[in-house]
Length: 173
Image 1: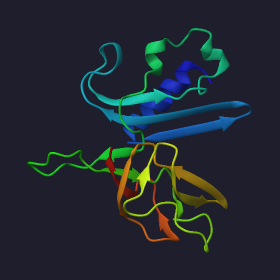
Image 2: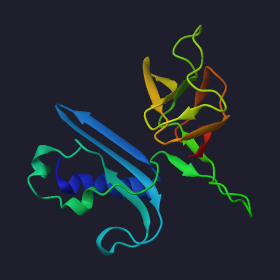
Image 3: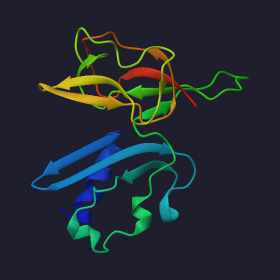
Image 4: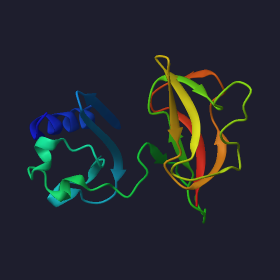
């Protein structure tokens, strides 16, 4: 995969409102996340969605200098989460939704007899597992990717979820 292919993927993500893309093939892995970024983009780009190439995602053929460091900037927002509008006159931070990164079955706990990963009022950190989504017989741990307090659980246990569906509401700390 070369830079032209990566730019084509980013263009497709932009045109189809895809917020996350991951490809792993024969020792090569690339993961792209898109999040809204206020203000101008990189190096004179117009304002709009930001893109981040995560560490370890640059293939060896591009790492030799064909991508500039400016192209690997991560926007200052939580990937995979969107801000909910704060009510007028609100002084606290707006709640943020943790959204499903895939289609699958939502599980609040690691097993039926175990306690849920998080409850309303639980404090979470970026690496805190908040749930599991089973997709094609694979259990995928979903992490908070932010620091905050869970204010709402939006999905019932063992129910199907769609890509981008809100799972939890979090008040950032």
